[in-house]
Image (tube, rainbow, N blue to C red):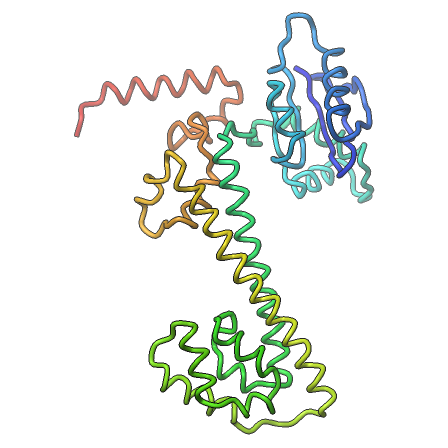
Length: 334
């Protein structure tokens, strides 16, 4: 067996090769791209015997995506994506100085896959479509988180100089709230909004009970509040306008990306299975599929992951799973 620690950066990779005893066989800094991966294959080939195959190479790296990882998988290596926090905790087992370096992290990763790979999860052989669904679902979720952060900033600004808007618009991400805040981002201009103007915004947002809601919003916006200096109010209004514009753009992109997520998810062969589960629609089902993957050998049964921890060797796993299968076949049907 040959164990490789790969500490990757944007433009280079620090790698270390170890034998089963933990002896360092080679260390190098490789450029990102075709030249770098070719050099890594050369380093590996120099250490493997004539009868050894690529499955004898175990690689630890702090990412599970990207062309470099795909090249490692295509070469037939065993690839173990490791969370950077796990690497940091593992490093602390062998030193308390807190010193960190790229070469040191490569050494730590090689040690991890040499001694603890039975506790790690190998990169799954998911299909290209499942990988695309995972990327889209994660990007969609990230946009939602970004919107939430901007909403919190917007709400904090309104609480400080325009609390009536918080009372008038419980959902600041709604289209009607954004439209009215864009038109009237300060207390004075908001108090001048007519009921017809408010009702038009509610109608464009497909709200129900428009007359009553328009009256309620107008009353809330005209409520008395403690004043702020005009210069300060103008500054707050500028920040509100910027935040509203950002949130509106995020709303549009979230909706557009949700369509991409659902379209890709609908093309997957397992989409109907996920949709059959209560509460899983196009977006949430895609998120679940992306995280679980579609490698048919990854979850053979309910105990498969525990089996892999108890029996790190693939042969032992197959034997145990075969025994379970034959036992289930002997049981009479219920």
